[in-house]
Image (tube, rainbow, N blue to C red):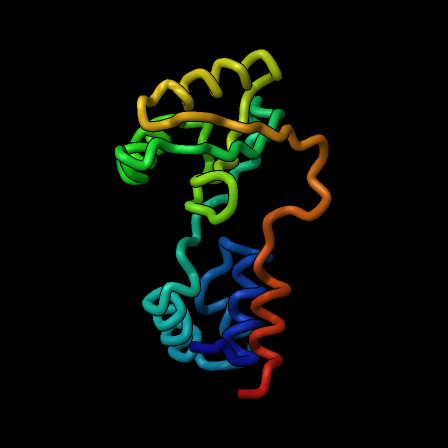
Length: 158
């Protein structure tokens, strides 16, 4: 699956102005309204676009500490019960099964370093988690982004 130049321009526009309407998007992109709607529908259906909701900045709501935590889990419990436990912790923003020395990599947030300890205690409180290694992020150099990737994918010649 690829994206073409129009898809990339459409994604770019909605990323920059998520509240823009389909009619205004069609005017700015100089394509028919039906084309914009059909392209959006296909991008959502294919899983390229997963949402149009607001992006929340954790620090702006009081969660100024970000940490990355590698978890080693007990293999007899498996990933699913641990993932369900992590999903119930609001400060766990994401978790990924990984290769290497750990089993799961999580991004978590906290209000302070002291609060980070509380969050870590909750995270490792599951019987399936054997060990945690934490790295505290000092500053965000490159925020999570996908637009450069979309633009590069659209520029590729199949």
